[in-house]
Length: 442
Image (cartoon, rainbow, N blue to C red; front, side):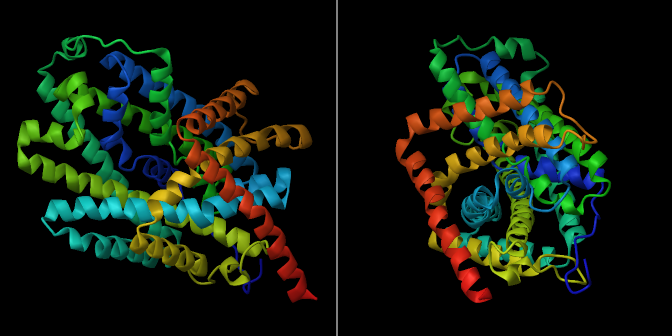
């Protein structure tokens, strides 16, 4: 591109990219969700099996995204794949649902979680929660205005800190088990659990493994993307799986299966057993670091989707600009950050996230489905990386995602219906936007 319309620079190496994968997946979920899984399982072994199965299913999707990223190493990720395979309307519906609602809603929710733990760790009053959350979003946007390298440095630091927090949990669990992990797993009598409940327990596991797609949103800034993207996605997700299984093993070692099921804050309860109140404060700081790092990735990735939409004429043209010096989508960053702050102050992000959950998983399913289009229509352009066991791995992931959507719709039809309504409202918004665009051009 010309200097008046510059492109992104490829500044992210394998280490940076892998940290983005790990940081995009590990947020606050692993510190709280295991208690929910324990409630729905009968034994510790069942719990560990679900976390392993959920990780393997997610890895199947990650490998598919690795091929998509290698085929189209551009900013925008799923938006780009949908636009090329299925047209502008499905791509717009993705951007409408994700970049304008889900991404900023996620940032607002996780920034508030960060502020909750940060204030609790420092003994600050709850009246500071919203100001701290707004300050965190503003700081992250400000750092990313300087370009992807500045954001990557922040990401690397906070990803290492969140991995340190998980390592501390695992160490505490090993200490509390006194070297008898086998006895720990057999210590609680099994509870009868119907098969349907086990499938229901898999849903929050899969949600906790979500977030791996953010690296594809930033693919336009990855060096040697055909090689780096598959490596970083695969290594990053394997690292997440190991962390999640070890963390759950630590919870079982320190709390037991029944104790974990009864806990409202398993990470804090585990730390308190060894270190008392100071342990709970320490892990609160660890969770704060974990959530802060997630916000950084969601803002950076979401802004690239918005910028790509703007450059396509699917959003305001100013949002599509890339600043020549920093090579950052500064207007898109500011727009996403401002909207996330509005949601934070209004407190409406919780409902927005509930209403877009089905849309998020539909985006994953249709994103992976574009792989079949690429394989069929671009047979003469083989990808430098190809997903193994094709077409079975993509079919497995898409089938699992559709199962998650069906289960979510059955268990919570109101939220699922609202999610579909939000997606449907994107159709008149798309045609209205195109009409305004033609009026402005004519």
